Image (cartoon, rainbow, N blue to C red; front, side, top):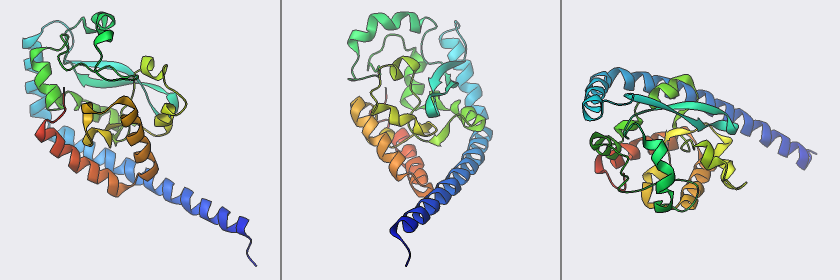
Length: 220
């Protein structure tokens, strides 16, 4: 007679094999789609780079920012610059105007954002350099958004569960209300994604992201 403990061990082995298979397949898809995206988007990158420099000559076109990845590992995340060069120095004076409760900072009319910055943020063009992060392996196309170290420092043990997987460019909360959600709603949706993640769900979220970007809803 096969014991219940043996059944549990076999189920655990199957789950581990399925998770390994998912991670390998996910990584393969990430690399292929990131390479394809970067190849197609070269003309757009050049146009955006020129406009950013014309709009605000001070500061880089693409800037890197330290973010927290899987298991709390730090990495540099790339973005097209959408703020004035002195944006970080002005943050402290704006914290009391935060429009999202919790560990994130969001402000609909953030004075630090440049004219072109408002446009590329609304269209999510500022996030496109993160395709390089996907190639480097510290981000995925789909996953919880990588947080800033100062945000993670305020996380509860519950919130820290977001760090169990590789962060992504888009995810479940980005297509479920985006900036209209509270921080705790974002965390809950990230944890739901971690629990249900699959290749099918990843593709579903990628297609929904395209629809969200086109609609510009709740983007700022």
